[in-house]
Image 1 (spheres, one colour):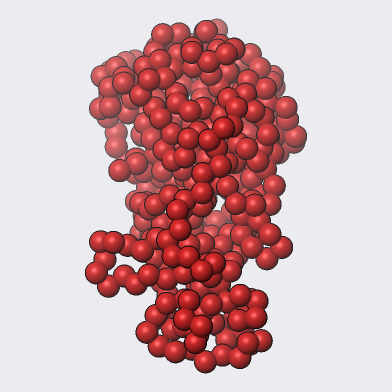
Image 2 (image 1 turned 90 degrees about the vertical axis):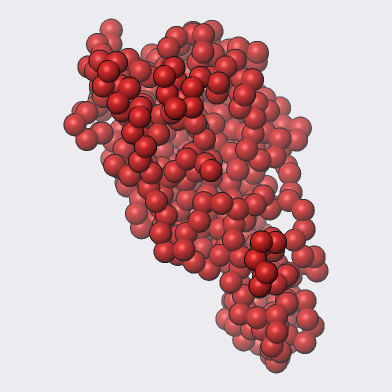
Length: 392
């Protein structure tokens, strides 16, 4: 049986902490919903070839078989602006900033269209689907990678350590979570749970604060991560993850995604050994990651009931509205972070993987659930740093 190590007075003080990893050096946390998402502008040089489809002011004279900007594409291979490394068939389209009077329209991906509408690929995905590619679509990663193009290379459900898994009800493709939490983009969002990824109105809800699922697991190296001054257990249970391997667009400098973490561990088990966690494990790890994880607060606390962003609960800044109808409002006392956004840098054209993982720490009880949505590429030619902060 769990024994709480902290009184409610201290818990309220923790809930009131508001510490975010601030972005720096031109990084950004806002953007628009393009295919896979884009944020910012491509940072084009303003040069274009005589075909004129890239946009700009100057004329770029390059031979049809020459790769003048060394972006891997010639004019014969479809590069519509061979003087701009950010414009080629391997780039992601960047919507023109209507608020910037100096912004110029450009066809970054050389498909003959400017600011084409976002692709939505999750409209008809079934709640109980355990197809990894459809789950990636639920977080708005729609595009499949070609031989020299960006997009998804593979997507599968695994355990926290990366071994294949059949996730069952630990995964849900949701069109809403309760009565007040719709998707951030598209028509669906992904739920991962150490219990059942279901609300009371869904088939097979847990109907309790504890539902035992996949059993003992093996954590990734460095996890579960202890919180400063709050040592946690070392064993994990009921772990599940979505692992997506992808190739970045040639003009991408980073990416972001939104998530919100719910836990029945809140508030009784703050700063105890029972420290359920959600991580976004990236390989190769970008600079600023902790053991490969890119989702944590400015005190380096991983996403758990000990993170500074717990803002949804009775007496918390965001109140209890986002708990309504989720099961976290009726099956036991609980809380949530509210929507957060994590961003991280990426090299243009880089192949990398993200493993979105959640688990129970120290036991199989008092389950936790994370919702993930609105993956976007950042293509603003600025510096992107690892960071997490509340959605604005």
